[in-house]
Length: 263
Image 1 (cartoon, one colour):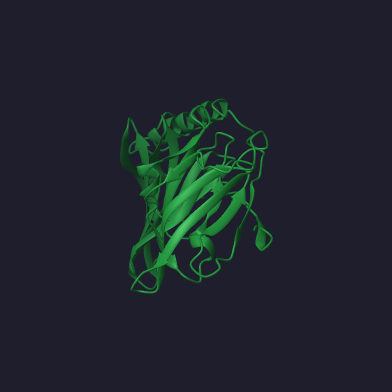
Image 2 (spheres, helix red, strand yellow; image 1 turned 60 degrees about the horizontal axis):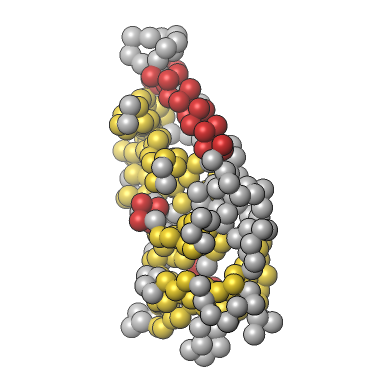
């Protein structure tokens, strides 16, 4: 029944990091009263970020070089959407059955997700309330297998709610290798349009709150929870008047650390 699968390879977005605007004066991003920057909060942030990235890489348990492949069949009538894929080269292929219906607005709603191992008739896990709603034109409600917490095992996500703008929310389930199941992560569900960078082991979220304000947030994993560590907010006062405000997490608190021109 999987003959009609469309093959697709997941390419994780690789980002080298965000670059501060070239036009931003250097003094604006240094601690007030320290023009050299030596010993400034920005130095401390950079050192802490580097140490954090090294520690997160040490926690990788699976194969972080593994790239998942997955496929979903176009639904026939009201039959479940069938997907299959591998979340690790050390684990058997998994089969996903997505039960769905159309709502009054013409969106496809995925309610229950049954997950079984290849060769096994019964599912080993059933997600009763997937909470996924997407336009019918979006294949399989955005089904993806992607390593979201950089532990070497790929995780599951579906679009939670599609929007006309750039802010897209997902329902996310992380694979727990020691428990052999997927677990929801409410904090990750709140991050809009997340992109996962395996090189920096950070989550990048590009968002827009209005026509005059948008930005980029950077998250890092801490004890199983994505934590906001950096933000850049662009605020427009006119077509050619834009200010970029920088924030960094210092001593557990997100603080403004500089301003500059948008670029």
